[in-house]
Length: 46
Image (cartoon, rainbow, N blue to C red; front, side):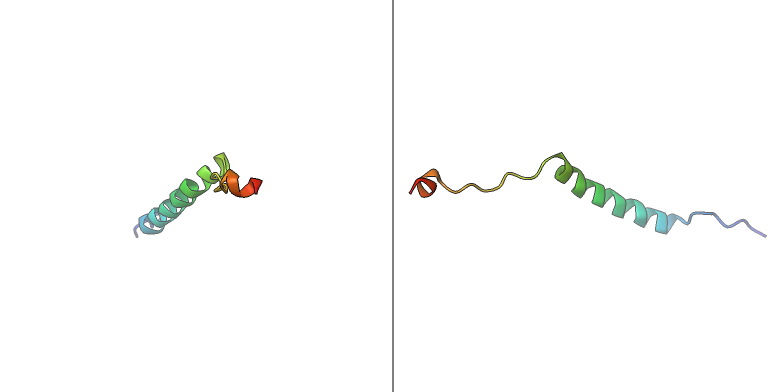
């Protein structure tokens, strides 16, 4: 009788890929929001 591995490699690889992608997307958002596009000063003064 063979021992089954507790964690199968394919679901583990999928989980790592998804968590890495989510971390890569969330870390820049946590560091600071992207600069909002500002309208030209001539329009705001008018």
